[in-house]
Image (cartoon, rainbow, N blue to C red; front, side, top):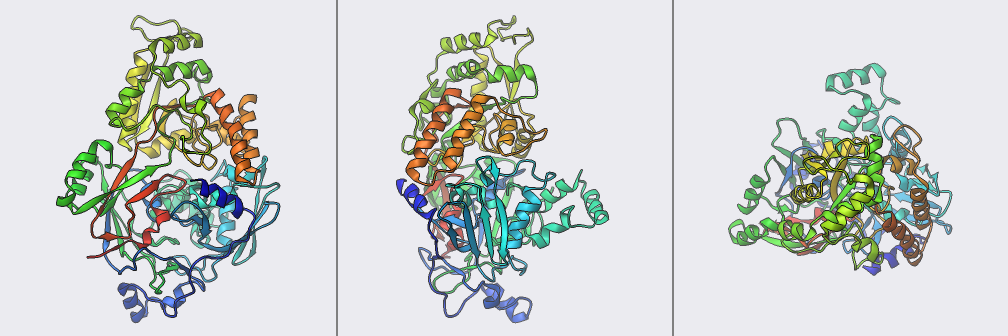
Length: 640
């Protein structure tokens, strides 16, 4: 993985030109689109493509056609879309995760100080409805979404350096410039990663009809009322997108303009049993022979309330590709045994996350008594010692893991032994001693601990209905903590609800997996409250993002010290300098001990139908590298 960091540090101060082959002498399109052109309902392919389409070389030249079947859960499962086809940032990771390459921007220039980034967009690139994609769309994202207090109380912290917010300016229709007060050594990496997705998710010509700044008030109010929304913000998010680029909004409207390879045909509704996406006739990538991607006509996601039903579909060969939800270690044997019957094969997923299960206690809890308890480091240490990690590893992860905190993995250049291994042994005696030190020595008649004010200590830990292994692990953690007198309850719910409660600081605690296993600087959510997903301290995180309202709270001095240390990482241009600066952050994080990890992520797997080609047998699996999208899923095709 070292090549990643070397390449990135070089890229920061170079002008990077577009990659790809010379344009093909004649472009070709899918038969269905050719029929529309012939009928006069669609412009010719040459008119739909940009002047310089991105030429992507596939493993094998494919053929057009087919329907790609997958499964998703009900509720918020938008990562199932993002990780398959909705990764189209300004710049992107190459398939090997070793280099940042052109994408929507065909080239870019960084000034010597690393404070100005100028991106040259592909001339003639269009949204899926044929409207030109221009710098205005990116400026709209910044000025009308991220800087709009109604929509985004906390603009992304990666748009700030040294506490000062950057600027976004239109140079001309095809050129946009980002400027910062000091060196932003991580800006290109951020744009190429998951955080960069939000920038290109707001087609101005479509979105402004739902925006209070642009829409007629009476018309907007009527749409809010008709849709059953409480505000124009809710309407905007439901019809356009969440400010962070996530959510179902961008997939909720049939024909909603997009730059992805596939666009929404059948959105999710209350009674829908599937979500359908069809090829985007204005998609701007071609193969070396001039064939306009994607090869596959249609994506169909079946919506499942029961993961067992999704598993049965997979075993029966009714799912073409799947790497979410039912691909658990406990299901691996049955999926392996039924490969011939289902006419599919297994592929490996190598995780780059830091942890399989991380517990976030809300250190900025609205209840002063719980806040004080959760902020007590001895309390968190006691809870960590009380977790029987071996039991969880053996039961949930079939022995294929090791005890670990929320820390970079050993093969990461950012590895910190203290952060990774501290307090991971199962020791009930030590757990009790630390809980006593935290002021919780008194117990009621049932053996449950009392708060210092004499009231019963009780709180709820929330988990998403998927992935199942996290919910299963949580149930075991609850058992372990009750054994040492902590009266805690598990609550498994839809991910959207859990995330919403996290963002509004209404959680007692929650569990999720840990990011930053390899590239610790690109996802710092578990290392200190510096991310919109640092749910152990969301009020502090909002403050760090520059928010100065009721959602934000100035952190104590020791937390601010860590934030300042990470600011130094952001302003360091070289990889070696970033590693050294990040070591300080992780040492401070280890000393504070923000959240509690359980174990390393085990090797994972997915399934793919034998008839689907151009699918690697082994893939990196992460969030900032949103597998499998960087592997160019638009090149996948069916051989029969």
